[in-house]
Length: 348
Ligand code: MN
Image (cartoon, rainbow, N blue to C red; front, side):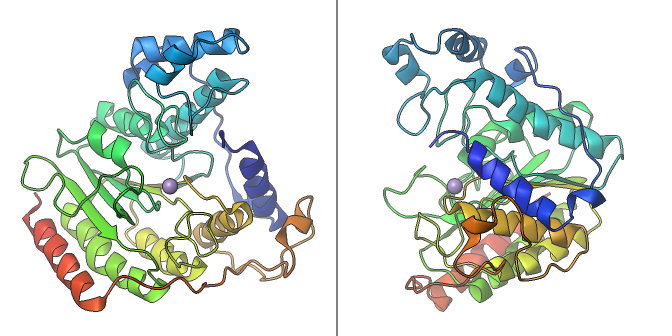
């Protein structure tokens, strides 16, 4: 799967169908060309992406492989143009926060957390999150919280800022042998000061109530302790029940708890998209979050709109928990949470 245009349309149309766009202020995005991308990505990688767009039909597969442009990150038409927009969108978002144009930014097209400096990885070609955080650091920000709620470990962002305590990366994800990207263990990054890295690895089947407990103990504590000047929250929807990843068992209830909790800190925040392979559930989640941010309660019955038929057979905004066995047992989860809490207490 390439950059999910269909997904982007689906989300945009569902958000619009609830009239939420009328309450938003639009941020204009001018696509990046070369130099702004090179603030994180290597010159040769960006030049290669650019050159690929000029010769879509005729590319050297070996060279593509060297830049990770195969398997889950194949070249596709207008690749360079797309990733330039995508990378610029999150930077434009944080600029709006920096200049006080708004306190909350929604960028459901952003959140490509696996992108590496010289390599595409896990559907991510450029890393808009790293570029956005670099923009904040250049503006003198000293405490940035990056919260990664995607099913997969936020490895690309964690690695990019592992050398600094100006960014706290906190990723809650599935960790299982052989599961991509194969990193994000509990103690990864800890004890290597000044690293500010928190990883919360979970097993399959976690439910809303268990996830909310973990979130309250870890994320809310981390926000209180670190007191970030700004928060970037990646909301990958591959954690939902019914996702093709068949891993966690979450519904919108988790986010109905999480989003108001994060907003209650009155810290400038940008919510980003990310993974999500059940496209209608992903659109539902990001619409629910948009509604929460805008203080709107949304009708369960999905309004008529151009993608209405995709939401059958029930045509409802709700996401239902499935029957995935929960492999997270309370005692070991509590032990894990206690370890992370003591690490948070040691943060400066
Ligand atoms: Mn993911």
